[in-house]
Amino acid sequence: MKKLALWICTLLLLVGCTQKEEKTTFQNSGNPLIKNKFTADPAPLVHEGTLYLYVGHDEYYAGQDSASGGREFNITEWLCYSTKDMQTWNDHGSVLKPTDFEWGIGEAWASQVIEHEGRFYYYTTVQAGEPYNSKVIGVAVSDSPTGPFTDAIGKPLITDDMTSNGPRGWWNDIDPTFIMDEEGQAWLCWGNGTCFLARLKPNLTELEGEIEVVDLPLFVEGPWLHKKDDLYYLTYASMGEGRETISYATAPSMEGPWSPQGKLTGMAENSFTIHPGIAEFNGKWYLFYHNATLTLEGIEGAIGRRSVCVEELHYNPDGTMQFVEQTTKGVAGI
Ligand code: FUB
Image (cartoon, rainbow, N blue to C red; front, side, top):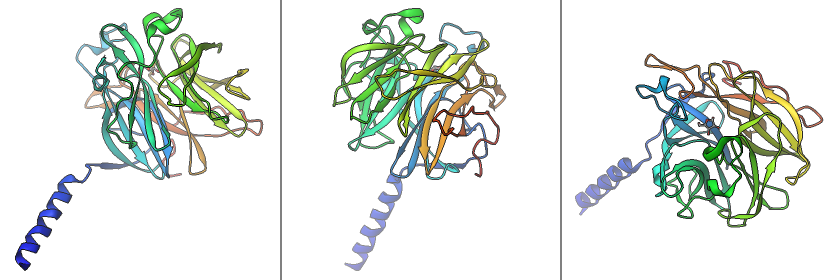
């Protein structure tokens, strides 16, 4: 009998071990933060004392350096990382792929994950196949910040035919960002070439009312919404000297009016794009972005081989954000 009990205990222990989540850990050694993969479009989420960071996985392919028309990018999955102190980071691996959406055919472009009433909503850019044949915005849900995430509505939330095409045609519906305002109204903002803004219904998976256009100087893409004290912030990739910089606007409410506040950063080293992701964590504010300074196995950074970085963000007494210098130290060891 004793022997049998011992066998059962050993078996349970073995099963427990094999079912343990596989997780690797690394230390923050300065920028770029993630040094073993090309990563882009950082989107932080703070939940119960942990900062989760969702990124697109930029992947190299032969011929990438002469590709154009969007084929400079090859991003087939979104990755997740987490930390409790900005120094020790856990790598949770791939948490979602464009092909996890039945209608998705590729291109894990920029996203944001938010938590609401215990559920995690993954708003993200996807290249959709028939009948859409364009960039669209999808939404996936999970009960856990690290997934598994599944398509919330079985179709894209925003499609190309819902917005005016502006200067960027079939790929102007990209880069979603979310905020819940003080009145409990949920908003989604997105766009390339045109900055779109719409209310969401309380289920967070349907638009409510008209899609508005926010007029922002030099707006390119990558909007990010956040709130601090009494101000709402709309931070975005803006056109600099031939490459993107980050600029922002502020407003007293999500209904506006939006006042342009100028540049938050300069251009990112070696990268055409730069993409803001802002969060408050353990009493400090952080700006995540990407440059393209990493070299991996002899393959140098490029437009489609970027690397996520982070800097501390500081505010002036009037609520404006101080210009952020891009450094190699980042927030290592602070
Ligand atoms: O990563 C692909 C695209 O590049 C994103 O959607 C944009 O914000 C830009 O970073």
